[in-house]
Amino acid sequence: MKLTTLLVAPLISSVASAPAGGLESDKLSENGLLNLQRYAQQSGYPNPKCTEKNVVRRKEWSRLKKDEKLNYIDAVKCLGKKPSRTPASVAPGAKSRYDDFVTIHILLTQITHGNGNFLSWHRYYLWAFEQTLRNECGYKGYLPYYNWAMWAADPKKSPLLDGSATSISGDGAYVAGRSFNCVPNPGRCFVEVQPGNGGGCVTSGPFKDWKVNLGPIQSLDTTVAPNPQADGLGYNPRCIKRDISTQASLETSDAFVSELIKGSATIANFQDNLQNPQPGRLRIHLAGHNIIQGDAGSDFYNSPSDPYFWFHHAMIDRTWATWQNQDVAGRRYQIAGTLTFLNNPPTRNATLDDVMTMGEWLGFKNITIRDASTTVGGPFCYVYE
Ligand SMILES: *[C@@H]1O[C@H](CO)[C@@H](O)[C@H](O)[C@H]1NC(C)=O
Ligand SMILES: *[C@@H]1O[C@H](CO)[C@@H](O)[C@H](O)[C@H]1NC(C)=O
Ligand SMILES: [Cu+2]
Image (cartoon, rainbow, N blue to C red):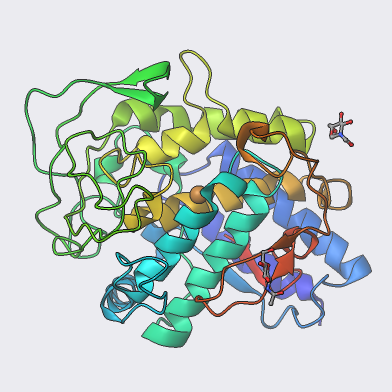
């Protein structure tokens, strides 16, 4: 049997039934999957254990069934209750298995952002989270994503953030009298993101009792009690705060996502267009983070503390995969950037042979950037619908 029959046919039908209907960025994704299919027909899957029979599909949250959503929510809450494996000598604030993931992100922030492994390290990080939900907390599905473009006009209407029992909770409680947030930070105030109708704790929905235990480290919310440790790894339990921003989400519209994919000729262009804010422009990576703003949401180091993180970064990963799949052979192994955030301090260029780690306590072995250069190579075997 041709792998294409199984791989692509269901994908096209699901794209065609998208509630928002006919997004250009979804058509680019679909076109990329057709390219990937043609490539795999000729050359096989880069991960020999990945076949047409077992390749899995990551779906937009709105396309999960109710019981699938509840299974995902339960599994994340389960990780939030299981004990941490990170030693207290490393992170006394890491109280749960979920916090083990937050901790490794905090520890590696400076060498996994604005550099040559930002995309590949986060691809591996998301997969490790997905596997842990499945292996340790009974999740039966695959990592869902949040397609910002579908909900850019009003994220509070998205099934992910509408506050319902099948959402990840919605906006924070309204806090009056707040000023704008400077993004990316007050020292480089490229965009003033204005306050929305939230700002306080999430008080309803599945994550109303969720505990953010680590940080803040570089939160734009300056009202949060400081962490007892300078490195942000001390214990500082508090609620999820959010302030859903349509100003930010409008920069993740279909036009912006499509332009990012079509208008980036090289991986260096793609990474810059995705990540580097400019005066008046958040760019998609920061815009997606700032859709929820808040304490954890706006914190460069601590952003995985809000379960929204995984949905946003899965969409980043999907967008990268879509860009790669426009020219499978030509783009798979493109790499640009050094080893450090904005090359500060200056370091050599990253290479495909560089090793990436999930640390000692998550339970995943080191892989190379090359391993993470496709969603159907290395340890991976998934595509995005
Ligand atoms: C690093 O990569 C850049 C961009 O591709 C290139 O111009 C530069 O020469 C490289 N540096 C080294 C030391 O190879
Ligand atoms: C994994 O990579 C990290 C970072 O490079 C390194 O410190 C660690 O020793 C490696 N672990 C193994 C088992 O090779
Ligand atoms: Cu990150």
